[in-house]
Image 1 (spheres, rainbow, N blue to C red):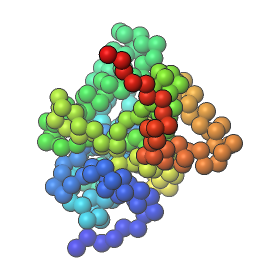
Image 2 (image 1 turned 135 degrees about the vertical axis):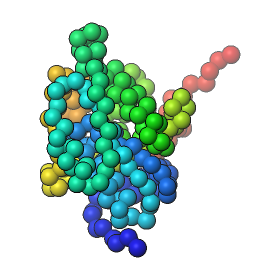
Image 3 (image 1 turned 180 degrees about the horizontal axis):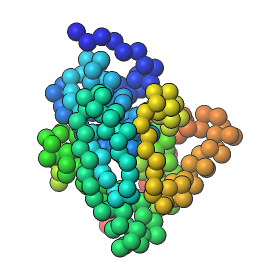
Image 4 (image 1 turned 180 degrees about the vertical axis):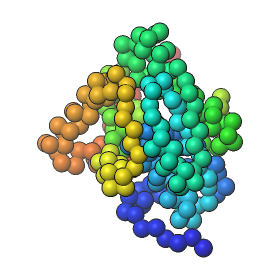
Length: 245
C-alpha cells in the first residue's frame, strides 16, 4: 500500500489531472524536460505522484540538447537518484533557428522543432502522452498574447490529442502559478540549468509577463481572475457575427 505524501501544491496538480482526464493507471508518460525550473518541477511532482498517489503510471524524462553546449550532469544525477529513465537527444536546432534561418522571432519555430523531437522520441519509447511544464501563468500570457497580437481569443488546451503522432499532450501544472514552481525549485533544490538562448528575456511573452505584473499591482487577484475566466466563458456576451451565405 502506498503511503501518503503531503505536499500542498500536489492538490492543484491532482485536480488538473482529474478535471481533464490526463493520466490513467498503466500509462507511460513522457516528461519534456528543458532543464528550466518549470519542466524540472513538473518532473519532480510527477515522480512524487507516481510513487505516493493512487495512480499507477510510469514516467520517462526526455531532454532535447539544443546544441548550446549545456552541461546536463545535474539533471542526469537527479534522474538517476530517483530511478527516472532519461533520454537526451542531441540536435542542431539552435544552429537551424539562429544561424541558418536567422529568425527575428525565434521562439515559435524553436518550440515547434523541440516539441516535434520530443513527440517522436516519446512514441518510440511507447509513451501514450507527453507532459509539458506549462503552468497557469503560461495560459494567461498565451490568452493575452493572442488577444493583443492576433486579435483572437484563444489558448492552448490542458489536454490535446495529436492525430499524426497518435499521442496526447498534457499539462498537469495548469492550475499552478509560476511563483509556486519557482518556490518548489528553490525549496527542493532542483537541478535548474542555465538557459543559453540569446532570445531569453527579450520576447513578446516577457512583455506580457510585465503587463500582468502591472495589472496585479492595481488588482491583486488579476492572475486568479484571468485564469478562472478561461473556464467561465459567456458566449452570449461576445460579438459572434453570423456568417452570411
